[in-house]
Amino acid sequence: MTSATENYAGVWGGAIGFGKRPSLIMIDFMKGYTTAGSPLFAPGVVDAVLASRDLLNSARENGVPVIHTDIRYFDPDFRDGGRWLEKSPVMKNMKVGAPLAEFCDEVAPLDGELVLTKQYASAFFGTSLASTLYALEIDTIVLAGCSTSGCIRASAVDGVQHGFRVIVVRECVGDRHPEPHEANLFDIDSKYGDVVARAEAMAKFEKFSGENL
Image (cartoon, rainbow, N blue to C red; front, side, top):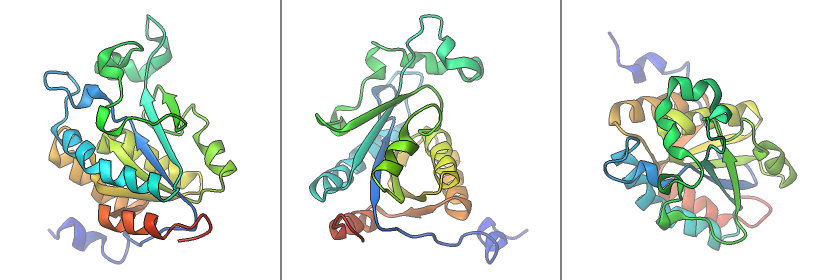
């Protein structure tokens, strides 16, 4: 049997590249994923948070719009989580007011940065993200956050389906286990967007002029 890379060659894996106007979407960097002993603890996310500090600072310094998302459930009976919480009750740790539902300090939103709260995996589902990006004339979404196999993948798929160029920054996404992390990066890069190194994304941010890259 050939390797996945060999099997996909010439069929999947074309590059989409950056467009003219990027936005950095910081997806669900919440303490539940980085706190040892938490049911959601994911070592890969700890590394991604640390790697994302420079990426986030680069976006801020170069005028790239930054949007953060979090997951929070407001209903005491978790009805706002629907079927997803029946399938994945561990997500009930993200109820509003819980310490695990707070942003990681290292990459927390600044005053004035947009925060969108969601109840499901995709940053687009049930939120105003797409409308906000259209209004800002954004054509490229750069994704950092967690988890690679969950909210990053779901947001990447929805992103391309909403007409955006999708860029996932390899060092700045993480998961609880390396196998689903790598498998989903491979699949995203093959079918839905481009997986790029942090240095490449930051270099693009530095060239951003508000008009083009």
